Image (cartoon, one colour):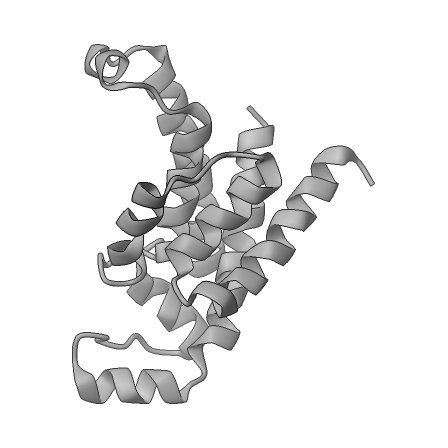
Length: 160
């Protein structure tokens, strides 16, 4: 198995395990990619990820992947304001990740991923729907999403 394939598989394993450990798909994916590629995740970034696990509307796993791409290739504010080739590179990598989500789940929003996994989406702000959602054992099914997202993120990063 090639070195890249080994890294992708490592990220997938960690991504799946991290969801049970952290409970948040954004953090689980970010930390899986970071551990696989030896990227440093500071507490501020980890804390900032909390609202991106389904609460933003976007799938938290893609949000975690995008954050990891930013850790790897991100630029400081001065370079970002100039909108140079570095930012275009990041946008291209993010687009590749997004395309993988669309192909597998029909979209990159949490509701689209839920519909693919559960046959319907849940309004997690509604206590009654959240209760029903939790009864579906979402960590089991959603761990496949963090697994895929971590692997895909490492793959698109390595393919650059």
